[in-house]
Length: 349
Image 1: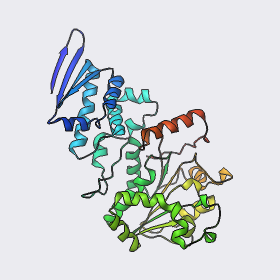
Image 2: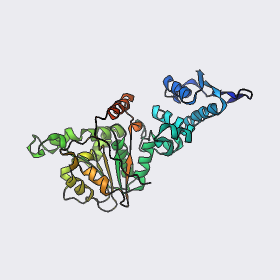
Image 3: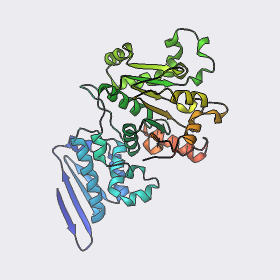
Image 4: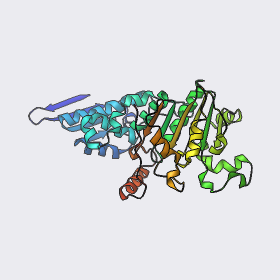
């Protein structure tokens, strides 16, 4: 690395050199648009060719931009992947307190460093990449899953609420900290009792539980996932089938919790037995129940915010890790005010 500073104009030029172009390009996800964002964010000029990258501008801003690539390089050398969210987190981290004020939310800054993102890895195999948090909000969520018995993950679609909870559950099962995983969600969309639908239980509920299966097979090899299901180490069932059970040494995940009624939520939360963990995920702005105030998630957010052993992790659109257009869609609807206003969950650290 070679730094040149003009003391009279306070302008600097920093050249970063890497072992090959492929490694350098991986630091900005092979997306020149991210370099453009960095230029605008720090008011610097970036030139890259082959295996080197040159940053020009005000000396202080050049040093901040340089620290972005140093942090990203650390992540890559630890085996982490760089995406748009990771790149943005690196910029927020480099900006420090200034970025906290500019962003207005500061969630990315306070959530932890990029090194923490790279260090917190779940699962992974020869053919399946490890699951890693990709935003500051996701990092805080995974830390909450490690520390609390009951975690509510709240926020819009695409923020990884259920996916990360399942990854953490599978890691706990692999480490033999639990004996089984139970995943459930209310079948509100059916609009009728499941008993009146054709087919056996599996055929009745599969359309409503399909997202859980999809996430499971994305993390595990197909034969491994099926083996765990066949051995009843992983159970996927509708919420109605949780009644009357006591779940010991289990990791229980309730997806789409906003569509559980007050009675169902109480029933679900009181199923926990010894050495069990519980995660409820949901989006308070997407309640399908009528009337809306019957949602057990809204009631739990009001009643349990100060309860020991329980925490609420709040995501926002900056944590969306689906196609970039999803974040823009959420922003547009929030700006127009189409959805019901979100109830802010109390965050316990």
